[in-house]
Amino acid sequence: MTMNDFLFFTCVAYGLTFMIKDALLFKFVREPLRERSEFFSSLFSCSFCVGTWSGILLALADAQFQGSWDPKIVGYTVIKWALAAATVSFVLDLLTQKLEQSLDS
Image (tube, rainbow, N blue to C red; front, side, top):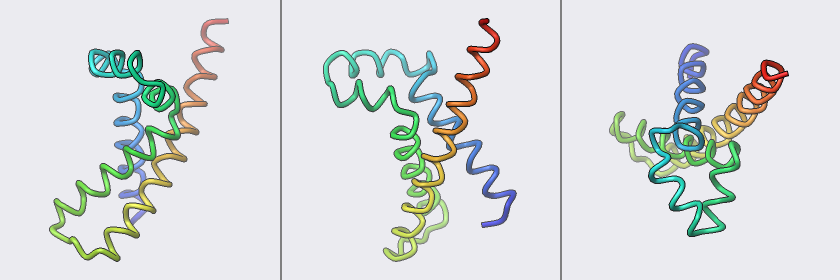
């Protein structure tokens, strides 16, 4: 993976995480799940958690797109992308929250 690929992936991963966790687009799905289940309530309040699942989804989508379903390669890619997406989503979410707090002050 080149640096450009990594930067693109991190932007897509954070965008997907934000859409699932915070965007109005998925509110109609997110809020009923959050109200009915403590699991989903915890999941949707955690950018690291949603980022992990975003990375897994992106890795599986990439494997489908590439047509490569070698279990070793897919397994490695899923772990690598899940950890990268979780970390980037967590850090960017913290930075975004700090920025929002400083703008509100």
